[in-house]
Length: 115
Image (tube, rainbow, N blue to C red; front, side):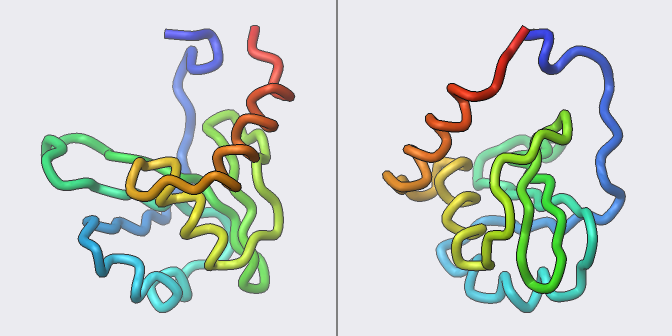
């Protein structure tokens, strides 16, 4: 495994679990409304083993805007609204391709210096 993932990482204790269906994100704003500060969003896709975390997103919510971080607390997206956050989640978890999000991920990847 790359050095970037070496060791263990503490994850936020608050966890929003979304069992994916085509309608899953219709109530996302309501579900995420109960969280403030840092929490994890766990997307569980059909067919994943029960003991799998699925796709995990670490976010920090402040005044209805989200900051998206990686496992090493590197900020990748700052002050995005709920709609944009859902686009990020859908793209990164393979639910729905988004060219704008893909381009942003490429830009971020090229800026991150992996040892």
